[in-house]
Length: 483
Ligand code: FCB
Image (tube, rainbow, N blue to C red; front, side, top):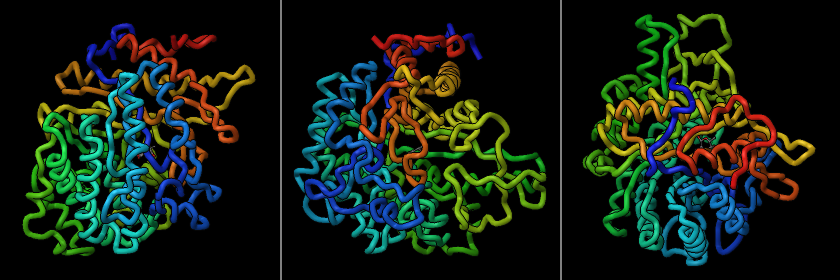
């Protein structure tokens, strides 16, 4: 890697942070909002750490002004957040609730006033419960409902929000939600997960068209994928074959239809014992394959896989979000996930910034020249506040420094990366892990909900202001001044 003193970014690079509605908003019963699948799931005993839920979360619904001011103080020039579908369309169909939309109008106005460009994600996992009761993502109808919802939000905010993202990580929604069951709605059936993946693809395509019809032409539409960086334990043909199958189930299943207009043939063959894919109807692939203005990629850690027969003796490792008793990977029982060697975050995810570089290169190969955004990247650590009120999360600074350096390296190699959204602005509800994992650059005291920028926030603020990365090593006290 280049010397850190040389890591500098173009002046138009976007420096942002990302959040999602259920993880931060709280106010779950206010202004007409109805339960989402995450309300139901988190209130079901045994599904989340200590039974924790997002009823209050970090109360962003009431504190959004303070949170926007915090971003402005840190010098961020963009913010990615998601809209809660059940706030806007409580039953998942029919007319919009204006009070729900008004919240997002106020939030966007506040951001624009502070010179922070909003990037809206339409779906970050909080499906209205009523739609789940009607079949959820495995049911094709949900894609049409999503398109209707996309049009509503596009019409309401399209005059002031230019950057749009249809779905966040459809892989998690489909495979963690319907196969491993560690995410809402907690169903455990591999066939349902494959159906859900197809409906999500269709929702993305129909939603993209609906957004375009509802908004000014200058606005851009993208999707945020957690494409996996799949590595194999060896070059043995059986391990390579295992890697290819996981790549199909993690990446090809979305990249194929969204970017190339077809599912990989090898995906059909490998999953033939689970489904015949007859739910893919005439015209679906055309509807899904919409030209996109940008791509969002979320990256945390690579995956290391091998064929069960050639597994070395280390303990099999779960996928990035933890697997319960069920596998998220339909018809991949003969494939083993291994622990990637190296230092780990509090999630048990190995820190490997080269994976982000590899991912950027791959996207650039698959969609040459398309503007790319890192829509999520970050790390959880066991942060604590010292007696002097400071949170010295120097490991997070090192994580950010190495990952941003690899982003810059990909840019130097010609990859069209336009911006970076740190996950996350502040500590929040980390799904099945409840409040036990802190990803924020801003510390949240869950008793008082007080926000305190960690050392990493001040480091990141400096990067955003100067376009260069300060050397993480000699971070002595006091931490750099944000001002
Ligand atoms: C991603 C999710 C995000 C957060 C991070 C840690 O998969 O999109 O909401 O949970 O992981």
